[in-house]
Image (tube, rainbow, N blue to C red; front, side, top):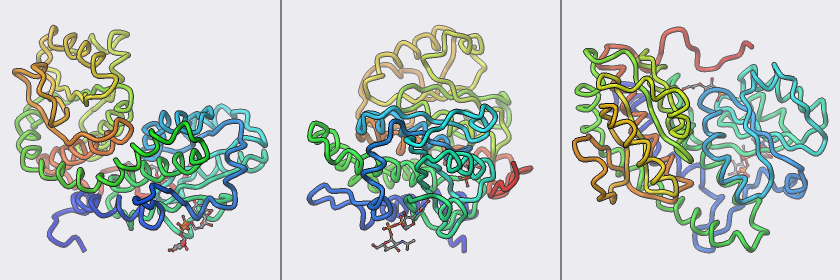
Length: 368
Ligand code: UD1
Ligand code: F6R
């Protein structure tokens, strides 16, 4: 069932043109810009009344929570925390009856996430699921939720589930804030961005030949066994997720670093030999990213930069760029992760590794 693709991972990366549409199908009316999530209808008032929202997940699913937290907090005006399921359990975090906990899981079977669900249910919290697998344990055990409808994901490395989780979480934030008139312009801007998303992903996928060459030239087997990815704000999740994809399928030690933390330690890693990817779209963090870029180039770092296709600044002279379409700041990370997914795929296949079945990993982690 891989069709024209040599691996499920590449097929699923390409499927994102359709899977993002499937996640929104029947839920967003783009004519009157209304969002209706059938799965949340019965609990909407209770969710809005919660005193805080706690997102709980593992791995890539955790990154989709990191990616959407800021918009969620902005639109709902509720405090939102994002927790790794394992840490949440290790620390036995306090949970109360008026908390609303969201469990994000592609498989719906991840043991740590399930244990955290059980823990919060016992304490009387309202529990929501964001799952890809209808009938999975998390889908059944949560009080309500949203299926992301991305279609089956076969490759161990999660790609299309990530972008669909991102959209599902964004739609939940849009739905929860639809009674707040002051948020209307922001909501409309995000909904319009969602409308164009599939097309933006299609344009980004067209970068594949360039990324294939870049993988060999900049991140080939002759280069360092390390790679650092740097971004901030909405792109913090992108660099964490990009680094996870790269280490998972190409076995290169990759690290995602928040640009705001650079001078607190990681800058010591920068020299002319360290491979670096920098993610800096034209958003409100751009000038901070420009400063970070200067710090890096002053130390002879030569990052490959993921930037917007309409960025005509002179910041990138002498550097290689990956130019992606520009969308709303809060959705840009969906577009920006795509070149990193593709790069990780080629970094694996260039090394003759099978990206669909990375060593030591299972698709569904059913042990704690
Ligand atoms: C539902 C149907 C869909 C149909 C649509 C038409 C299912 C699975 N979905 O989609 O086929 O086209 O109505 O109106 O039959 N849930 C949880 N936890 C989760 C995920 C979901 O409890 O992690 C619950 C929801 O609260 C809801 C049910 O599962 O009660 C279905 O969720 P979802 O598929 O997201 O609902 P709809 O989009 O309305
Ligand atoms: C990475 C990956 C894992 C999963 C994690 C959680 O590509 O797939 O990090 O995201 O094991 O799995 P789910 O989403 O099924 O709970």
